Length: 114
Length: 115
Image (cartoon, rainbow over all chains, first blue to last red; front, side, top):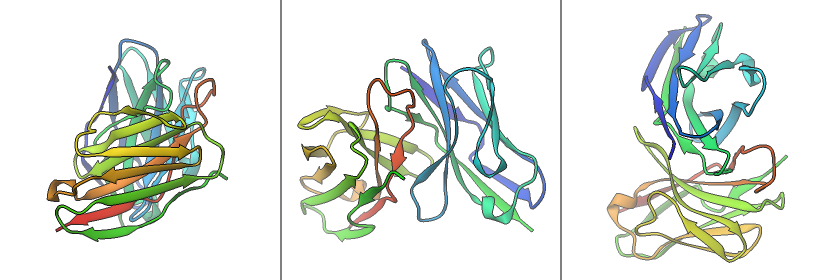
């Protein structure tokens, strides 16, 4: 079975500053990794995903993430945040034998202030 | 664009009531899922379905059942609602086995309060 740990429950950040959200996973088989964003009172929207290939993945809204197999991590970064990036962010993992059965982390709340 | 529609955004029910949460997707997806979202716990899988009339338990199925009579519709049923089922419920779908992407497409959620 796989599991996901998001190391920060809340990350306060000033507008135009960089942000990094940390995600570690555990799995005995190959994984597929995802970051989702949830704006207030909405469902989840895919930010980016790693399936194979380049370990640096670029997503929507200027976000990127790097898959590090040796450290079993998939940290999300943005070089300069906007107020509109205030949201909750979820890291998720699935495996080659569990298509669509995503295991989610507990979430990281990002609060961007002027 | 894929659209997953949950019939009710907000519901208030009383303890012991039977509750139906409906979900419809319009992209002919094989797989459909019900997750529950609680603060500090993230999303937890309740039930999923790989095909019409097929269902499998997720991580927290107790107190819930599901129905999938048509490919596009997946219903979550609380036979006798309890206060500890107060939560946000999220429906999702994806194309199914053999598809490259494991991405899930989510509805906007149904916030259920049980009094």
